[in-house]
Length: 193
Image (cartoon, rainbow, N blue to C red; front, side, top):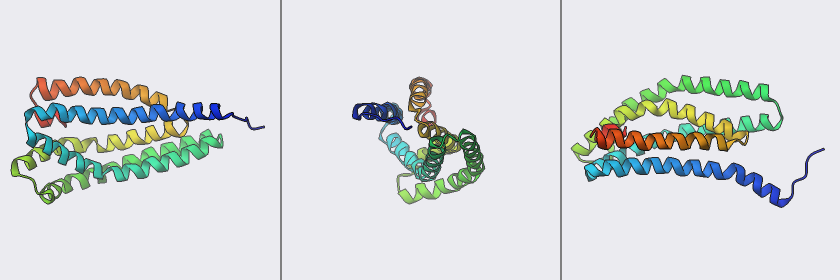
């Protein structure tokens, strides 16, 4: 017999899932803002270069969205059916598909970054800074794709708290490493990448 929830219990259950997920997104934004803050110490061209670089990287989030939504839809359906064996197979298949897509995504990013920078129409120095940032940061695209599949799978089973706790630790690490590479080591845009 299905369990009946009161309105307050439903709200608490939704908030228990939604609040860590929202806070996780807030921490993602905080890490980006801190990178801009640290790079901004080197001048406006560095902020512009970082912004152009991030816009290029964000174009690949359309691919991320396909994997994220697909993972969430399939895992949550199977989790709801209490079919953990099939959910595990779907998760494994999606991870392998993500790994297989990593090389083509990297190739697309590698060959697309210079035309993108030229298309944006920024100064030569800002373009060179953007290229320096992207030549390093595009290699994180497959890892970001894998991370999003894992986050989506945890979200699909209602465990957003575990992901949030990991994100707190990685945010603290990012703050320290950003300061160390961008400011202390004076690696400016390379440190941001």
